[in-house]
Image (cartoon, rainbow, N blue to C red):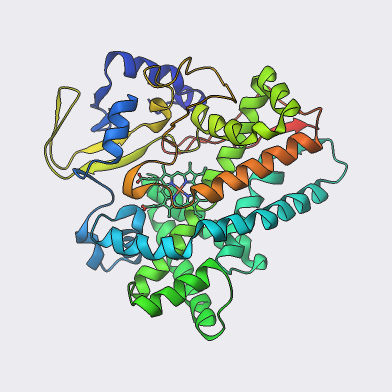
Length: 384
Ligand code: HEM
């Protein structure tokens, strides 16, 4: 695992692990690797497996640790319940549905920028700018500053996804984000608007459920989680279609299949490949003893290709039903932004296929990011 070949195509390694050692101890990295659907699904909801470094970092002096430990993604009940319930009230399905028209308008604007160009990079021209524009609008962040806060947020994501060498940069960036978000919260208190961020700020006053640091940390989390995974989902999805021309043709002929097609693209080659957690107690899994304090990788990318759960798992089938993939997790940490990510991916891929019926892959050389948690292309050149 975690070699350049693995990042190009992790699925053969997953398949071997699932078959011969589904609860695998990786001696080199000192962690457990779960690859079967049933084990990953059970681990995602297990109270014995916890996220984040625990309560210790809450009182740390270091701004980076303080912010990360206050994010719902790295919290467990009862704190998680409190943080998530306020976010649920702000991030309502109605608000997300209401964004569909706006998402379509932004996608149309991105196509206008492309103009008559025939060489398009699906990542740089569409998948990268769209989610960050959308989440900025939802968080009431001015578009002119996107370059700034996107860079800061990318640094924190990289560090929290395991790039330890990024620690110093992530600390500087988190400090900049805190100052920036603090000013924005002050503005929204004086002048509320109809964004999710404003709803979070108002909710904080109404229920006094979140203190100031928690509010800022979770707003930063929404910015962080709100874009990179969606970028990767769109890129991986378009590539999967181009590599499976029968499915591409079927979707072009039946655009109404976009909803099930998007779910299948997420299952087939998802943006989130794994989630790392820590055992809070001794656990037994697949006949193995997991000691307290050990790291466990729940590999959703492998679970999503398990033949015990999905017929012909290595085949892209845009009409697959049922399709209970684990790409958004399960249980109390189920992705808060799933509806938004689905809407963005569906609208972008649908628009691309409608506007560019002759879509073709523009290269044989694909470069993948080399991080274990996320799977995504650095660029995806196509001819339209
Ligand atoms: C296709 C794109 C996306 C994928 C694949 C994805 C995947 C995930 C997964 C697997 C988790 C659960 C992690 C766990 O079990 O600990 C998660 C949590 C989360 N996601 Fe997403 N996500 C996506 C897009 C988004 C978007 C667009 C947003 C926000 C605007 C978002 C916000 C969150 C938040 C706040 C959590 C933490 C929830 C909690 O801990 O209660 N995600 N996501």
